[in-house]
Length: 214
Image 1 (spheres, rainbow, N blue to C red):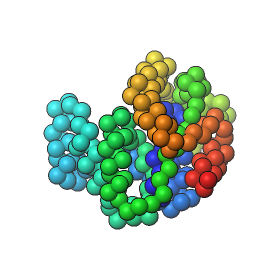
Image 2 (tube, rainbow, N blue to C red):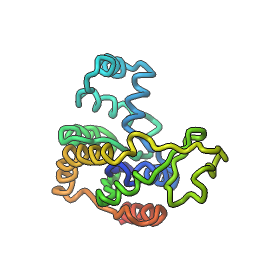
Image 3 (cartoon, rainbow, N blue to C red):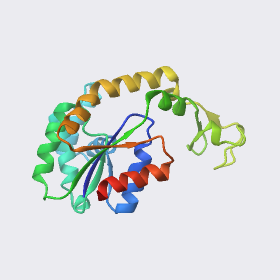
């Protein structure tokens, strides 16, 4: 079972990928983690990527695709995987198609969690992070804005820079400009299924599982 999951920043994609990973007993693979691990483990492609990253350049699509293919071909992904954060461009989508063709034939699902931009902005601007335990909370879920409910830290909350409204809107702009063609690519082929991400977390997970079963 191979699942590719899409969603703008703040839709809860990481949370849902983690839930699906546990329920389906297949690994959740984040592209960011893939790249960091390839560099850390000094794989051939990882070393190439390291040179580019350290010189301030983006990792080309062909190198990133090679790194993704190495991970998806690993024995740990034998039963399947949930791919998160890739593809982000139309060229990457085409390269992923080639990667999937090279793997043993299995069921494939392309899922997108959909949330209106204004809802995302409201969600993320209302987040606070505890500087002691690192947990993230929504202001509306906190009984006391001075005490962390996880570690009991006092006056430990702060707002991350990437939770500022201007930063969020820019991230959404970038997401839509780069990923919209990817979503249209899969939609035109009848491969992409959308799920309403404004529902409660457990309901979103239930809907995603229903789409997979369907």
